Length: 442
Image (cartoon, rainbow, N blue to C red; front, side, top):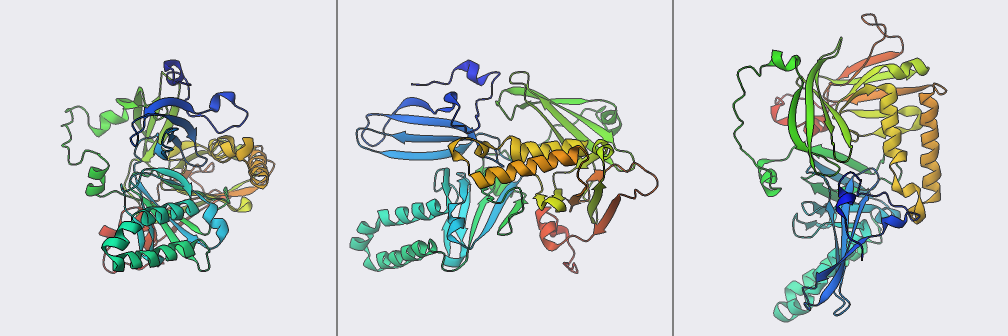
């Protein structure tokens, strides 16, 4: 039997990448009481990372006495700042193999057949789209014998609905799957990563007060009155510090925050967290100003190693595109960052290639491995100045920036385009309530 020792928690990363060659990556086992026969069974815990997502805890229980078995998945991270909604157009049987992380707080809908799994009615799960459909069918079939005896008419209608769900697995017609999670901890796989998935739309939204209450987030708490000397001018001249929890090991840590003026741009808030226990470091940047009236699209042509040292501000609402690689990174994928062009490209490589456990072991697919490794090599060439490409920052909030080395004169390698946000972009930014009646979408 394996146990989680304290030295595995403090100072070490307990969330392992999936690797068939790692002898220490086996699940942790512990005895647990079976709630069916009240004999002892075995619970297995696996702490791992999901590529392009975050850390999760996968647990399974089995009882050798009565053969009771179940499994569930829980997010090991905090509740995200925004909720998330995945909308997938299922067009072929291959789409049914996409992996899906469904948190407890996620609702799953298939509007084509008026089907919904409400939030908090199922435990979290790691499955595929086909697995979600199978689980729904099994759940509906369980009570059918009792329904046929008590109300044959209702049982007949449920039988017809079960047939509809089973028919979806044949994918004779396209249907839409929606996974909406206020906690932001659910996930639908993009099998063509790092390219953009044309069939999958990912949107983030601000939670309502009711959703915050359901997640157990305190709402309506009164903010403590700020000390008289804690005004904006004093904040510009000092580093503020407040206590928080490490996002990696969840032990107490401290976050430093400072207002910084970026030349020829605006003020931003830089926050950095360092954990003394496990050594984890994060930095995040938030705009110090309001959402701009127009969205901004910045296009920089990278022509050599000197461009790698340009300062770059990527807000959390900004998407990153490299057209020559057919690559698009959606908003909030790497959070807000104040770094350099090289720093952003390194972060993208680490996210797509370096931290992807599906590149090793028996869980890998050869064509996907080759594609992602080739993508990593192309990024290395760009960083070394051996490949000319265009780097595009598309920010609906207008709060992103790339340094102009010719300032205050125009930069011949950079174009900045201002454009009117679409209705959907305003929806993502939570601005539609403030839009006037005469607003026109593009």
